[in-house]
Length: 233
Image 1 (tube, rainbow, N blue to C red):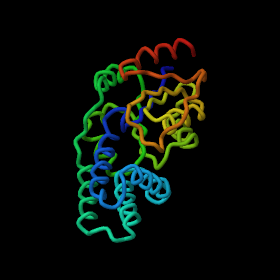
Image 2: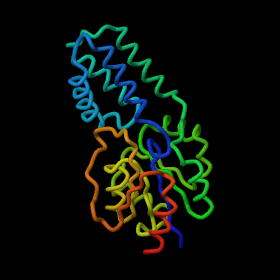
Image 3: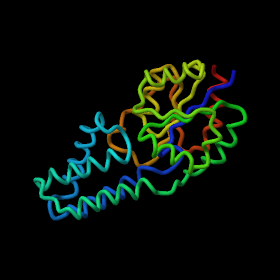
Image 4: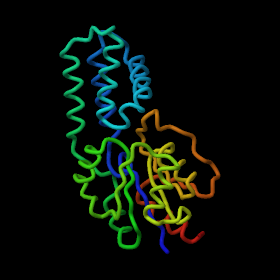
């Protein structure tokens, strides 16, 4: 029985966080007359943390958190044109083209004939479906799961649904907190591929020394890691 390979999407298969950072820089410019950019970033991150339970993950929640922060730092005196620009920036993010990360397309094509591939992503349903469709990878995957959050329970439910034993399942992603740690907790293998741009909320220390944890510098290293895992199980 071959491994089942699960993949995160944003900043694992294609660029995503850089669009958030570009929009946040524009947001700081819009509010430069009211607050310094570093303090604004802290206030925005606090708003995002508070709002995860209300809006979930994704661009729409980010946009609403920017509006809330703009109202907060200006004592509700933010000009209407600034709110309009925030909404426009969010709409631009929802329309940005998909750009695959280096080595993704060829590596996925190499793995697809021999393994069951499942895409596990979180965020807004419509936006995630758009990105998957535009990526050109949708038909390569045997399963697609869009979840509100990633936890050990969520992974266990997915593994059960696809009848894949956790010990023969691998989760690949750029987020230690969402992709690697909960998958390992659910009994699977975890491969961390750093992206270089990581949302502060997704930061977490690695499980150093854990036997089911691997780290790769590049996506193209996956076949070698998978071969090593298969040799050891």
